[in-house]
Image 1: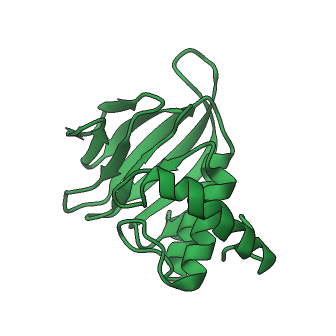
Image 2: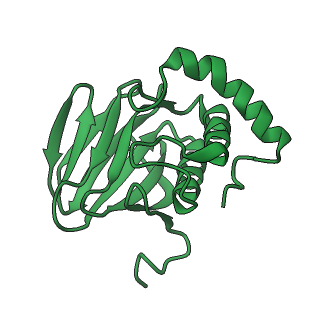
Length: 189
């Protein structure tokens, strides 16, 4: 079965990647989240931080670039980029073929799948820009719910997201308004 036809694969047309989640173990045998990623040329995600989660990206096919801290590093098949917890990071495919990578995230947090699934739903609905900025009123309300629901697992970086102080002041209020309008995490499709 093609990855494009696999019903377990989450399609994100704005960030131009497809994701499939599962369970795994890390190099020490501890439980982890597995995120398989197929990243189209020009695809990738904006900078963000996982305060308590380490991610290990191993490129299987193609080439990818990873932002870890303040610099971009290129990795090819068999190479791994390690992003320690609390490190601002992003990834992108600057090549001309689809890149396939496997990410092992520890400690395991099911919120990772929920966050990326909801972000992809926003993308499919045209409610988010390539830089991760919500579009329109519904986009901003969904974005506020996203940050409210998953804020312990991920922090969006500035830029492109508003500075953290504004996120802390405004997003909870927007999230309450969104919830009164029936917008809930896991129901963005």
